[in-house]
Image (cartoon, rainbow, N blue to C red; front, side):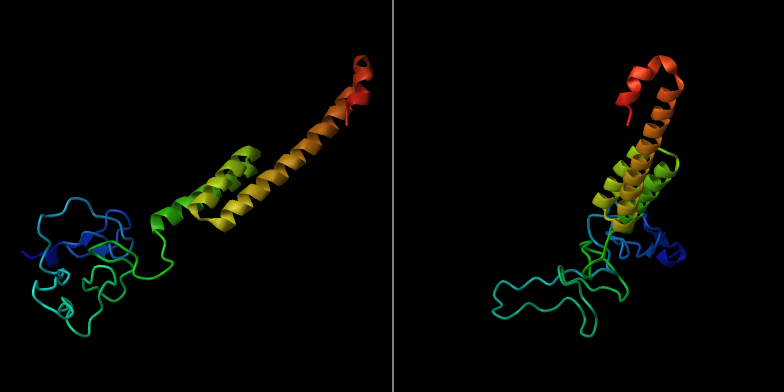
Length: 176
């Protein structure tokens, strides 16, 4: 039986990965316990010879791509290095973190719709901190607008209550 018969999937994003990969090439997460020696499918970074005066020999075959950080060969289409886990392109974000940020923003909007605007503001701030700008700002603004609307409605209701009860006539002047 070979390793090709049993595919290996990332524990976090469920992308198919190489059997000995330390990090997922899609999400960059470490895959847990690894054997003491790396599998032969992952090339080791080149080490200069002690007496060599020139640049180190490349561990990556000519014509293939290499990680800019650890110089291990990479597969086209990888977002993160399988060996060191660093992002291979600028601006990449962790998909799990982006999903959590979107969940906080969505929960904030739902909180506002369920007439609990402070929850919407708090969850919107958390969504902003985690990177979901659109949902975070929408949740915060919706929460603030709902709180202002509720304050106006409560003030109007208080005025009607005070005017309906004759015993509370002295308090009518205090109502907004």
